[in-house]
Image (tube, rainbow, N blue to C red; front, side, top):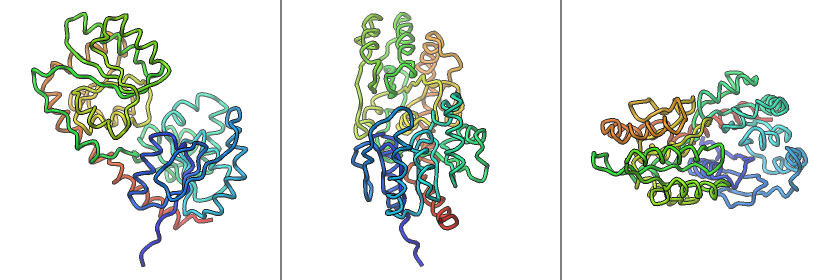
Length: 362
């Protein structure tokens, strides 16, 4: 007998692009998704329920909304409740008291939030209520274990990206005479170290190295970064592209040959995977999230030092090392295809959620 369509109640920030993409891939893989969110945003879902509650200090609005969400989930009668981002919607999922419950760790919620004792206590409670905890990568699973999650309750699997969509716009094959076209697709926020990147580009400019840099992202630092680029006499070589819609991103990435990000902590960076799918050579910090994807000297470069001089040196190496750029161009799309295709991985998620529903309905 054919199994019924898996019905998921997804508690998540519907305005966040990562939530939107995951919801899309889960739907394409056959799940029926009901989204409950404080944000007002159209998603590919069977039904969207906006939680119209006033924003309260800290996590109080999640607590205030819990009784209503409990009743709403009861009326939906999903096979599984999925809470995306443990410190926020994860609290709502835990308080709603519906099982099976999946807590989805995302990055800073499991890696940075535990530094705060109060948040660490909240995380332990939210994770203790989960029947399954997902982690995009092994270092996130390790962080979950430190918070009391047992091995049998952890699923390590990247959310992934729509591989076919991005790989359809391959960048040009590397060649010696190509201009260094560098792109960053991270937000313009303090923690993303874009100011450091501009200082490194200034050093390259002083050395007479020709390049063009695209900053495809927006954020509160944009005005200051534009002024910094002008003060460093980089304005003709740096383009501030602003926020780029996802349907335009593969084509923009394909106009470049190097990808750079200087974020010193990550879960699994969708930006990195998107650049790899197009065939770019990544230059990223040496931390567990990036070591999961990059082997230095084989398909990218890992930065142990995030000083402007070290970043400039790494970019110069990438420009001059044609064999490395060719290996990255050949291997990186296949790495993403095999390990981070969101459609394939969503089918795996759905299979695990279905097994959970079959053995853990309450």
